[in-house]
Amino acid sequence: MEIVYVYTKKRQEFGRQCNFSDRQAELHVDITPDPSLADNFIERNPVDTGIQCVQEMSEHEINTERFETSVRGINHTEGGWPKDVNPQEVEHVTRYRKKVEKDEMYISAIQQLGTIMEHTIRQNNAIDIYEEYFEDIEVDTVDETPSAKTINVFRDPNEIKRTSTHISWFPDGPRKLAVAYCNLEFQGSTPDTSMESYIWDVENPNKPETVLKPVSPLVCLEYNPKDSHILLGGCYNGQIAYWDTRKGSQPVEMSPIEHSHRDPAYKALWIQSKTGTECFSASSDGQVLWWDIRKMGEPTEKLYLDPTKKQDPTKALGAMALEYEPTMPTKFMVGCEQGSILSCNRKAKTPAEKIVAQYNGHLGPVYSLQRNPFFPKNFLSVGDWKARIWSEDIRESSIMWSRQYKSYLTDGCWSPVRPSVFLVTKMDGTLDVWDIIFKQNDPTLSLQVCDEPLHSLRVQEQGRLIACGSHSGTTTLLELSDGLTTLQRNEKNLVTAMFERETRREKILDSRHREMKLKERSKSSADGAKEEEPEEARLEEEDLYTKAEKEFYSIIEQEKKILEKKQQQGDDTDKADTGKQSPIAEGDEEEKTNGNPESEQKKD
Image (cartoon, rainbow, N blue to C red; front, side, top):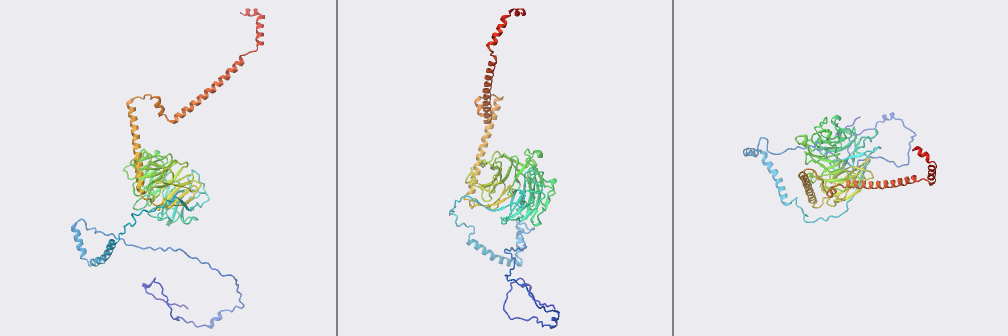
């Protein structure tokens, strides 16, 4: 027998909260007993039941934190004059106004909006929302010592450890961290080495949140600033790939290997564009390639980093670092293997004009390059044993530089919240934080992060969290103290004055150096033929190295002469000893000649 009872409710009451109340019981169905059904059952006698004198336990699962999402649509309309009305023509405007004023809804709309507008105007007149109440009161700044503490450590989960070559922060808050893992040593990877890279949840170091599975190990990895689900990666074999985390671990699309880089793609960055799908990459093969992830079949543009401006691939400089500032969409900078920095303009008319300037200053590859977020004309470069700060206006020399380190520098970047603070990582496992307002000769904070080389560094947008990647794939998350992350009073003005002063000083030195060169050239041209310079002037201009070399060889010559004299004296004494004969032998010879003088005469 099927029992159905229908509850009716109006559509407008769906989803409303249920209100319960007490009332008398209502009898809906009354089923009378049927004795004939007892014939279908057999009585069980005796009945055995097993019991235990133990407390009964139950297991429950609950979701302690629930995140509700909802999708809503919105109608966006832009106001303004209709297309057929030209607002600059008075006749068009008056005709359209008369037409609107005759509309029946016009008066009601004005009355409705008038009350709202009147309320907001009165509110604005009553309260100045931009008023600063405590502008004249000086803030008591606490001079705390700069410090940093370790928050979390993310280790490569594979048995064969790889280097953390690049780090990228999640663009929508400090919740996730994308880390690229790759063994950069030539032929250092075994067939069992994993090629996976990971996205970590900042609060869960035990297991990566997402696994990225490329066909070749990733050297660099970058989040798309416009879409946090999309990541761009440069592979060790030179290919460029992109992932959509909503579509799984495999890359959505990759560049074909015949149109990709011939060396590892050391840097790949997103470009400011309307679609948010354009990017470009650089490699040690001397190429800069532009891509659109909607069509990865071939690069949209290509540039050889040839300083001779002839676009000769054989003379191109290998790229190790890229710099792109979204506020300057046509400009970019490249750090080369040979220690030079190339400033380029993408929108130049010819490929030769795309390389605008060259800055020489490092003795080895430039591993990091970044413009100051507050002063884009000044940029930081990290290479060999020094970090240098440059000005775009001066190509001959950097305006500021760090002291000569004992260990090699591997990466560096500016603080996004303080214009005077930058950070560098070193091969001895230390992280140095520089504050050029506080100190220019030594770092403000030097922190031993680990006992192995640090290879990558990235600061989160808010400037407080820092991620450092090491040689064995350990990514350490650090938090800086308030003193290094809060903007100091008049800091921007002080840094501006410092950069301008140093730039002016370098310009004066550069002009003085050029004047001296011109004087030397004019002297040489006036004299005509090369004349022998006086001995004193020649000695002054001689290099210290040649002086030391001459002194060294003169000492050796003196030592040789002394040895030769000693050997000659020894030879003379030996000859004197051999020339002396015994007197007995001499007497016998005289007797022989005296005893037979005729024989000698006959012989004569």
